[in-house]
Amino acid sequence: MTITFDNTLSTNLALVRFHIGDIDPEGAYLQDETINALLVSEGSVGATVISCIRFIITQLSQPDFKLDWMSVSNAEARKGFQEMLKQKSQEFGISYTGAVAVSTISLPHRADSKENVDNVYDNTSSYLAGDA
Image 1: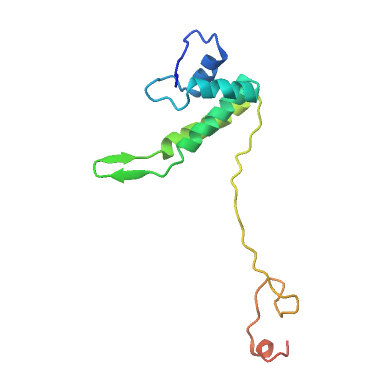
Image 2: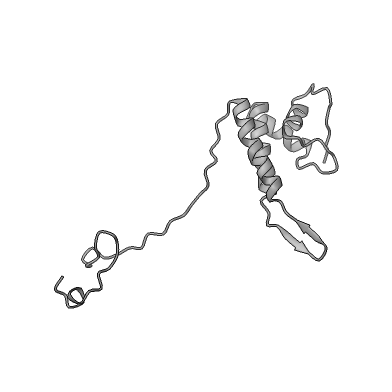
């Protein structure tokens, strides 16, 4: 696994590392091989930058933990990369969605029930007696 950075920014690899700030070999998130593969699959430096930032956000989305004297909190770093994602998307003119998947639960009911329009059962005595 190789991690290099060319200060002259003469390669696409160096440009991607520059834009994502992943230039320190001691704490790099991505190897050169991964960035080069993304450059091929994404087709441009800008799209690769966006993909790399999204990957880094996933790495920073691990739960925080505390063990005796050591405490690790990824929340602030993740916020910084999420902001960088917005900025780089604008800079490169690449749209992205900041959408979050949300699930909803819909409780089914029988069509012949006496459920009202608000999906709430009427529990009055006339309803219970079958008069409603």
